[in-house]
Image (cartoon, rainbow, N blue to C red):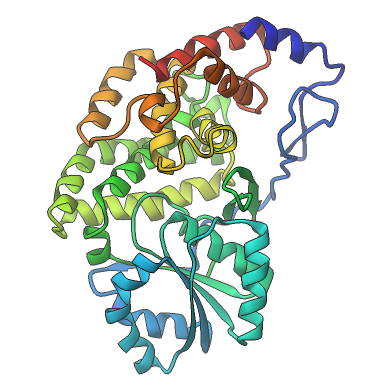
Length: 396
């Protein structure tokens, strides 16, 4: 497989990647067929306000009222059922009006534009997302179309989507489309720790691995990182990711056990802050680009080519399995067993098959081709060969 890809890429007459003023994009005649990516030279660090605590739901009304008088709430049904009894009295006390839209679809441009029109028709002046990662991304996309501010209230720690200045966009059917990067931060992220302590442990475990992935993916192709070889912003994000990894290895399993028993403990509090705020800052410093590599690109490939097969797999679960490939590509295959045991201890999937994808050579070739057609794989024969071997790490 790697020989075919090597020949295919280097028969192209132009280079696949070009840099202009620090912004990365692809030549249309180059090897890559990925979306054109232009990165804003400015860094947006995250939310204007971040508030985390045990009784945050009770004060969400006054927090939202800082930014608007009438909220357009987009929530998942289960998420709304989990928060409404505690959040609504605060709305009334703060004099906050609201319109509620329960949403269970994908984060697509079509749906975001539709809901933005609903927001405008309702004369709402602030978007409030309540739910998991899809709702967090969707609320940001709706706010961008409606030209309002956005406040996110995450009900799990499965991703850092509540905090980041971008949305992962899909087709209405659920295939990955592209990433919508915004030129501004959202207004606030409000996190109620009691809600997090009662979220499904599967979501918490997936979030822990998604956060740990940042360190491994920033290293993409390198066993070690050095400041002398990297820009200061990327290296700073890496050191934060390194710290994140260490904290989650030490306290992640305890947080999972506490959430399993619906206990709000310091471990849950610490892991929540790491998963949402710290990981969100890492993503924002790297402009939601350099902090992800083969792990997140594999996620995109799975959502694009195995939309139905892996429909039930969580974002962090797919990324976690792909980390075995990333470690091998980083020439750190010696670290695989420790990561595998860590994931096994949290009942996470360990192979493509456990994600719902049959580990046939054809399927591996599809995913390998998707990775080759990305900016994260060096376009050399040695790199292609290394990647080809790395793909096998997801089936053994």
